[in-house]
Length: 194
Length: 112
Image (cartoon, rainbow over all chains, first blue to last red; front, side):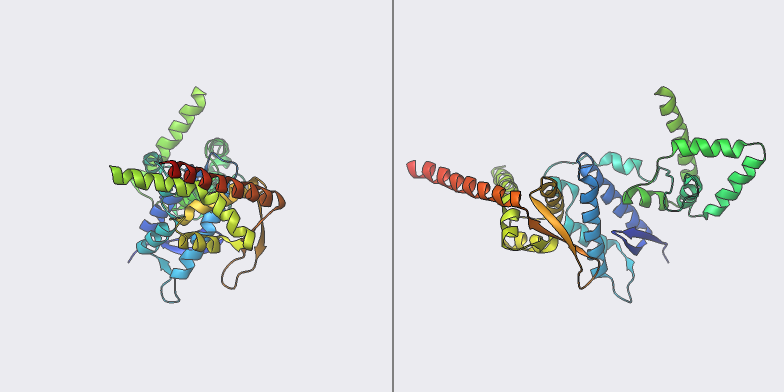
């Protein structure tokens, strides 16, 4: 048995094997970096993502509904690696490092700033849990409200598909919790330095 | 080493004429990205699909191409690209430049 993650790509929904999701996320993130510097970057990514969705759909049948490693590999071979597309070397090592370490605000399920929805996505819990916790903490002396506002300020919004996948794809482990704390501390440090 | 250099040079040449090929192809009729890719693949001008999308967007942003959405028999609507007025005159200029290039190469080769 394997865990499956639900993702959206080019406006279509897919079930993806958890490991494949991480590779997909990595691939999209590297492509995003490739086009990040230009005016039409977002449009190029949207075109590539909808083509990817089309290729994925062609590979699925009624009886096989989960995207597996070989599906992703086949589609990546058709579209090409970032190196093949740019015709040169691409900085990508950093991207692997940053992966599954970031927390985001979730604009798709937000009530206010998307903080609770973002945290919930990260731990695969219901946003309701965080909403209740924050409300309780806010009523017991205002700490919850302050923390919420700080997180709203610190956490970036998940805008691109790669960021949304990143937000969703990590299970709860001690490692992810430590990463969260570290991430928070680093962001605070950066803001103070600025 | 020598083999690697030829590959590299060939890739550079292909890259140089890719834009010209896309515009030339769209002069015949408007086309969806995958149609364009299939033609370019057949002609061995392009290797991976991903190369095309940034080019189409750049050409569109430069006003040489425009697109319209069209329903597809399977799946979501597709972007059909076509040449704009400025795109046609740009292509005419490239046609001329291409002929000049071929001439130049032939001239140099004939002298040897």
